Image 1 (spheres, rainbow, N blue to C red):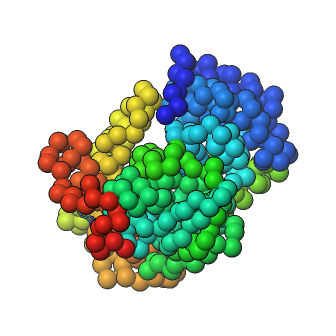
Image 2 (image 1 turned 90 degrees about the vertical axis):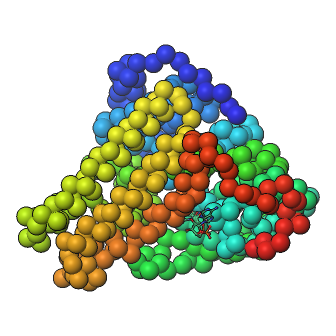
Length: 419
Ligand SMILES: Cc1cc2nc3c(=O)[nH]c(=O)nc-3n(C[C@H](O)[C@H](O)[C@H](O)COP(=O)(O)OP(=O)(O)OC[C@H]3O[C@@H](n4cnc5c(N)ncnc54)[C@H](O)[C@@H]3O)c2cc1C
């Protein structure tokens, strides 16, 4: 693991230095890539990272502070997406240096976008049971298998790929984590249509796909440890917001807005997936039921849960600011988000009654309520299901006896019923 290089830092001092630097270098007319190259060189791209990899060795809280300060100054930061919030921190944490040197910069400039090829038809919660294989052949690994539920795989340049490189050892020990180039004949991506009509997922068929020999994140056979890092970041960042870029003119701003449009098109239903508790009061007023005592009780209960969850999230970010690695609060936050989403869908249904089932412009909130009802189940599944979060909390936090796992110490090749 790469040690961080924390230095004493003062938020006001950072803001002042960033503001001076931005005034000197930011030009909205420049190309977005050129601007991000400047951010990288100055260490403002990932301020909490070591200086060698585009950072300044500042504490973890500096990343968020610098990101929002750049926007406030009318400029642009690093791109939002699974490249910057999952792939890059995993590569930074597990290396090797050659990959850090080669892959972190194009990820932070947005030149390379990423998707996550973890889940398979026979391996979701039991990710360790995955059966996609990778075999070394000269200068590259040859990959065969099928992945599924892969968000944004239809327009990603690179993939975080988990594949089995050794079936003679227990299942978690024979997995390797690869950086897979997506644009090649061996990678076939098919979009899946969801019940809420969106199509953000894909199934990905890997047929003799090639990964350069050195594109191993961490070490061969040590992919599970690196995968846990990615999953911990995924729970932590389950609700990414679109950056509020300045509406002003300029090539860099145009390119940043187009990049965000492109990225967030895939995620346009994610606010609905979270249940839209922010809309319940307005919805009740508009429907003329805000004086109904049963509905008022339900709204009060929902808003109480929402506020309590926001405080838990604040505690988690305070812990991160103090340099703590992602921990149990990721699972707690994810479970709370699922509970709130379901409760909110229930409250919206109480308000809209049978109208909740309607879609189209004449339906309650222009179809948003129906989209909420069809999107909320995804909240309990993405990034690890509710049941899996409960298992993690029971075992890792409460110290309860572990689930019985008879397949843990058996070589993968000897397991029955594997997918
Ligand atoms: C919005 C969204 C985005 C996603 N994006 C991606 C992506 O980009 N890349 C990617 O690789 N995957 C992605 N996924 C897939 C996701 O990670 C899997 O769907 C998830 O891990 C669950 O796996 P599964 O669907 O195979 O369900 P299963 O693992 O088959 O689970 C079925 C049911 O059994 C329960 N269950 C399973 N094991 C246990 C146990 N040990 N104890 C108790 N209950 C258990 C589960 O909780 C669930 O209710 C995404 C999913 C969603 C919904």
